[in-house]
Image 1: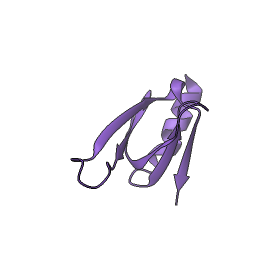
Image 2: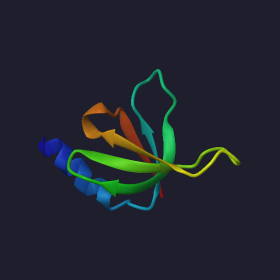
Image 3: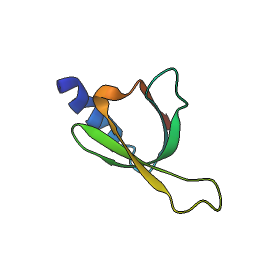
Length: 72
């Protein structure tokens, strides 16, 4: 669990930044704005295609992610 706490602390520095999150090699990564980080998970706000409603909030648990790419 200490590894996740370290990752959470590092991610908190980038709240408001655009991130890309991959869960597995077989799925396309999710891209959006990092909006919150807890000790076990983080939330990304994604933008739907134009005309398809409001943004979505997607929560990822640290134990389930492959990588997080931060665009700065």
